Length: 200
Image (cartoon, rainbow, N blue to C red; front, side):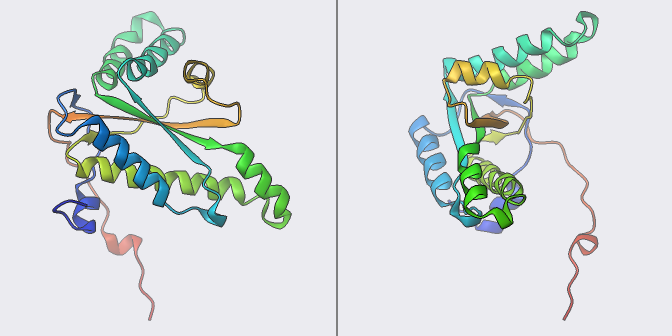
């Protein structure tokens, strides 16, 4: 964290769709942050099955070209304009984090601990969620705007081919990031007392 404490950083993390390319930090800082956070985020049985690709430059553009062309084949032409505008918004960002799960790791643990076999995919998903949250918060703390998308599974094969990832990697999410060009829209939140019960 920089000047913010942990709570402030968590509270400051928001979904921001208004992204540009005039970022306030260097690529090296972003890469270093992603590596450090990924190394430290916990996982059940220390499985460390989460994988991240930092897509910059032409690789960032490729992600959203794939999304655009995949959706163009699915969405009727007369209804495509809003979809096109939405995807162009993600493409306007500086970069994208691609999140994957390395399924061979999960399978090996299922074989090693058969009594917990049904739990490992759930735990892996939870671990990937923690990784996404931690990186989202860290990137926001660097002064970047961030949002998260889930165009999988329709883009999975094309992404895996374009980025030459192993067959054992399963795409989970796409996280565009960049210069925040507008403030996030306000959101409503439930009374926390409905979500947190204290028994003592």
